Image (cartoon, rainbow, N blue to C red; front, side):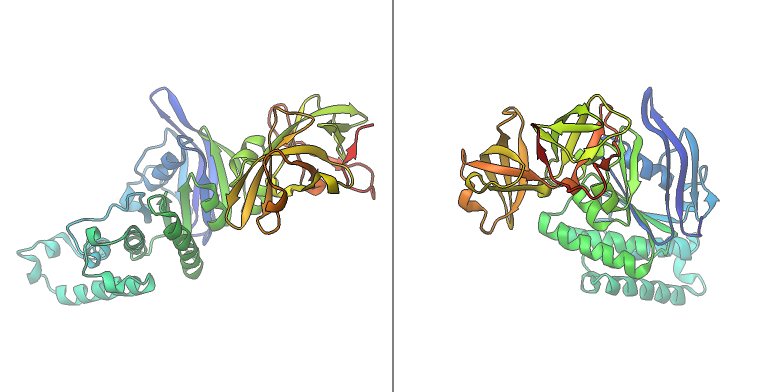
Length: 395
């Protein structure tokens, strides 16, 4: 591994008799922003605290920059952590908060004592150097005008930048961020996501970020590690995790709208059908039970009187406004107990979106995903090379 990498090898952790991490192996390369995402209680924050040295692993190894730090104290790991509540010193100014790690590392204890510290030779030069480094980082994060304020006088977004500045000024091998944007309102969170990504890119630093917000993970990450119940379910690029989820559980977790699930039944010769439609694919080896999944943006709808080609008859249950988009909640005629969600652009769609209105639904064949009874992804081939990828009505 490269000098600023962060690596976990078969890390295990229990709290009492409850397993929290079960053999997690994961690595963030130098300069990478790796996000660990999962529901509350899945073990992601415990994983971060083990990397930082704030929790001891029951088994496995932690390496930072290629060095085994499994038994090393937190201060010996040369890694900075930004907490969810920022952990700023409320009685100190922003300047003093940023300077604290520099003073701890750059000045001996005697030089930090109020009475005798001023007698330490070289104190003035050291203080000027520390002041300059703190001001340079503050300027980089655009908080220079806040240096003489205290944390209680700052907004949530400003406090977040101060916490990042205090971590950044140490020039550590890597950064650990535990839910760093969760305390901010939606508008500030969106703005700071872009800022954090731009900063990480500009500095080329290694970051491991933990969040339960999968939208945050998708927008920030070079790679995403999805966790459930102390295990890694999938590690990959945001596009891979979104478009090629390894399990149905990952597919359901990733995405701002719920994924559509339809039961599938075999009809012979490797072919399968869902809600009265033969799917344009073949599955080998055969599966007895499967689930078809398709994301809302790949569900197309038109008024029922303009139906063309194969598809499903459905009625509109209700339409949810999402700003520039709408989420159409649909009831398939072939399965009245099921619900489908279609994502549509708001412009021009509302004209036929009244509750109870019949519509015609088509699924994008290229975006279909299949999962077996255990929830694992099923690979398939489209039926016949050159065959048109359309959904056919079952005869």
